[in-house]
Length: 217
Image 1 (tube, rainbow, N blue to C red):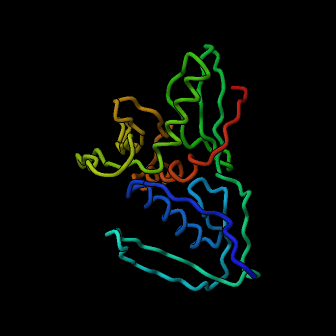
Image 2: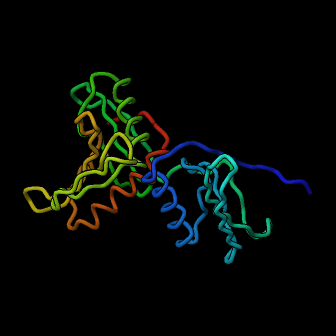
Image 3: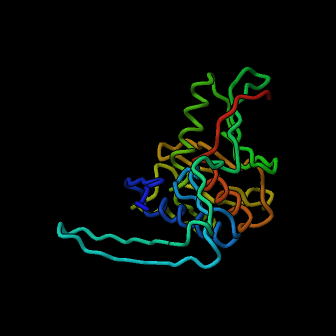
C-alpha cells in the first residue's frame, strides 16, 4: 500500500507559538484525547496507548538544521479526523444595547473566557479585533507585572499577555498589542495567579480555530 499524505503544513512561527502548539499536543496526550495535527485543530489523530516515538536532528547540505519528532502506530489502533472541531470555544459577535458591536469567546462549558473589553462602531471593526486575537494570542509572551517582568525582545507575537493583581487582590490578564491597545481580557478576576494563567492558556489554545457566530446580546 502506497503512502498517503493526509495533512502537511510548514511555515515560520515564533518559538513561543511553537511552544504553545506542543503544549496543546502534550495536554491532549496526557488526557488521552485526540491530538491536534494542525495549529487550528481541524485535523486530529488519536494514537494508541504506546505509539513508537522517533526523534531526529539533521544537518542539511545547505547549512540548515532540522528537528523532527514523529509518532507511529498501526492504522487500526488510532483514528484520523480531517474534519475535527477546531476549538472548544466559539467567538460570539453581537450588537449591544448601545448599538456597538462586541465579541466574546465562549467555551463549550458555557464560560466566557475572553472578550474585547470595548464596543466597536461597526461589525467589521469588531471582526478585525477578534481576528487580531486569533492571530496574536497563540504566540504571545506572558509577563507577570507583579515581578516587573518585561516581554523578551525575540520571538512572541505582536501582543503580550499581562498578568496582574487588581485593587481587590484578584488576578487578571489582558492581551496588549504592541501599539498599546488592549485587544482582549479575561473579563473576570481569579482567586490565584495560577488560575489566571490557566484562563489565558485556554485562550491561546482555543482562539485560533474558534468559529465566529453572530448572535443576540
